Structures are given as structure tokens and as C-alpha cells.
Picture (cartoon, helix red, strand yellow):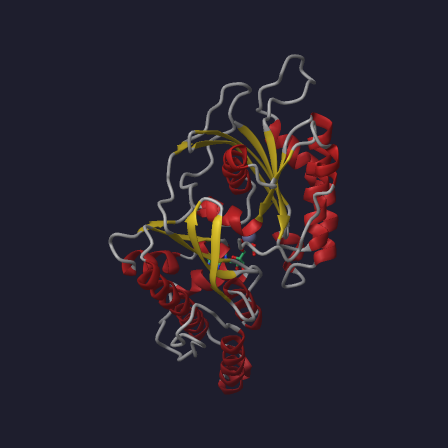
Length: 378
Ligand code: KG4
Ligand code: ZN
């Protein structure tokens, strides 16, 4: 099966082409047009700006993704694709609309099934991608690395990004139960907002973790809200306030109110340590209770080296840790296409509703709508 994935839930315009066969994948092309530079000056994503940029970029990005695809006959004929998978939620509604409406148009024009994918589910499946994307395949040559990782069940997924912090129990493909989530800010937001308070550029996670390598994680005591509570919920807004007060105090005490490089590094190390500590403590509690065969760490914050390492060192030996390759931690469409493959496989046997087949039912395809608050539970 060749699947075109489309992802526009936040500030990256993404399209990817994957080939899937019996649970093995080949990423033929993975295109990500990042808007990070555009939003840098605002210190965060501005929804209206993101949506406008998606509108400008979506077609060139899809075009690049399908360039290497086989064609039916003549040069301009439609590419040989079996289905289109698109993120329809959760995310920024105006951004989601661009991907969803484009996918609907292509699905109707090409007569292809359209698969609606939850963004969080996409991140879960990104854990199957552990190799960097291959060089651009020549037309018709296939190419790309074959990915043959597997999720063994039960599995637990910790999804940590700029918008999400969720612990999910997965009984099998397509069967999800939310164990807990953040009550306020997401873990990525805690990194981003701390960086903003320290005048470090957006996105803050990579900046903080770079400086943290040179700092002392014990230098400052940062509170870890809810860490001892007997549940799988998180809270980062109290931590953020404590960090703000600490920075204000250090600035007042510093000569000309400027933090030294060494203090900045120590602050970054202490902030990273606190966030990682909360995430790993709750993850280990969940692993202890549910005994998963696989533990999945995914989402933008999964790129954090300390988090990857700490989880790897502390999970029980019998639990396999699956973490995507660094470039697949951030939003991408390869993960959406792979999630789409599992939907297609399931739907052909269970006849559920996620696959919209325009050839047989144009009405159904047309009714697919973006849903900013789509919950991944069933
Ligand atoms: O998954 P993603 O690309 O977009 C969302 O769906 O939010 O995640 C972006 C988030 C940002 O908050 C960014 O600061 C964080 O991932 N991030 C990191 C690192 N790299 C990216 N956080 C901590 N350490 C990193 N190395
Ligand atoms: Zn994401």
C-alpha cells in the first residue's frame, strides 16, 4: 500500500509518502516546511499566521512528497497512491482546515479513500520510525530505509509536545485509554515559556536542553507539582510560576539585573531536571501498574536527550522502549501515513468509520470535518 500523509495541525506544513506491507514501512519522502522562523518573533505560534502560511505552502509540499511516486501511464497522470491519510484533530482549527480540505479535494479528484487520523495517534505511530529519512528516491525506484519495528501489547505511550502531555494505555492497534494528562500547561509549553522568561529563542526545548548540558541540575530547587499524587495527571503551570519568581529574584540580585552565563546554564539544567523528573516518575508509576510490553515516548519533547536516557535507564528490563528518530519526534506526515495504514488494515476487517471512500460515497468524504478537540479515546 502506498499512502500519502498530510499534517497541518499546528505550525508545520507536512506531507509524506510511505509504502507499507505486512507491518513494514518505507518512507519514500518526508517533507516538512517548518514555520518556526515565522513565529520566532512572537515567542509562540500565532494561529492566524500559521493558517495563512499553510495555505501558501500546502500544494508545493504535497507536490514534493509525490514527485517520486510511480505514475499510472503518462507523465501528468495521477500518482499511484492507494489512500490519503490526514490529521483532522486535535490542533489549531484554522490550521487543521487547510490540511483536511486539501486532502478532501485530492481524495475526490483522484477517487482515493480518505483516512481521518488523530494527531496523538500519529505521534504514537511515529515510534515505529527509528531511522532518518533516506535520500530522495528516484522515480519508480522505491528506495528508503525499511522500518520493521513493532508495538507489543499492552503498550503505554507518553506523548509530550508543545500542546500535549498524555499517558495513554493501548490494548491493541486502535484501542486507547487515557490514563492521565496535564491539567494546565503541556511539558513542551513549560520548556517554551521558561525559555521565553529567560529571553531564549522559540522553540525553547532545544535551547534549554543545549544549555542544560553545561549546567548543574541540582543548582536550584524547582517544585514538581503533583509528582507524589496517586494518579497519572500532570500540572506544569505551578512549576512555571515558581520558575518566574526564581528568575525575578535572581535578576534583582544580579549586577545590572543580568544573569551570568553560568547561572543561565544552571537554571536550564534545573528546569530540565524538574520536567524530566515529573514525566519519568509518572511514567514509571504507570508502567508498574499496567506492566506494558512496550513503552512509547513520542512528541516534540521526546527529542530531549535527558528524558530519553532517564526513561531508558529506569524502565524495567522486560519493557521495550520505543522512541522515534530525532527528526520524527516533531510533527511530520510520515507518522500520519503509518497510522493511516493501520486504520486501513483494521477497517477492511471491522468496517469502522475512519476510512472515507469517495468513489462509493462522495457524501461521506465531504462530511469529514476538522475537530480541534478530538479526544483519542474509545
Ligand atoms: O510535537 P511538536 O513538534 O509540536 C506540537 O504538537 O506541539 O512539539 C514541539 C515541542 C516544543 O514545545 C519544543 O520546545 C519541544 O517540542 N522540544 C523539546 C526539544 N525539542 C523540541 N523539548 C525539550 N527538549 C528538546 N530537545
Ligand atoms: Zn505534535
